[in-house]
Length: 91
Image 1 (cartoon, helix red, strand yellow):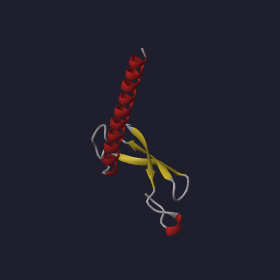
Image 2 (cartoon, rainbow, N blue to C red):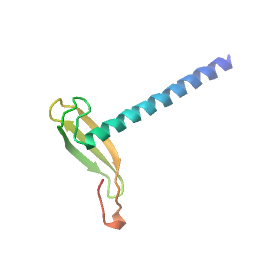
Image 3 (cartoon, helix red, strand yellow):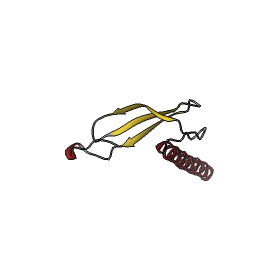
Image 4 (tube, rainbow, N blue to C red):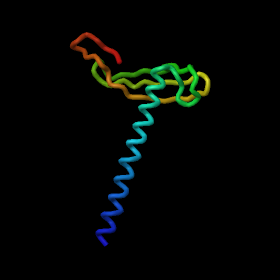
């Protein structure tokens, strides 16, 4: 009985990990397209940064993008590449 429970839990955990990996891969592809200015949904050059929030110079930034054509909206959390001590803030 315990063997079946452990096997079931193992299948569930492996499924969750694989799903998360595919989700992150898809999100990464969306961000690459958005960085080029192309909408991942309608593939038109119409992406616009509509909101940008930060917890400080060295923390991650939350950036929200929207497509002007199909109204696709997506939010990304991007680590900033500068630090406060270097005097450079940005993505």
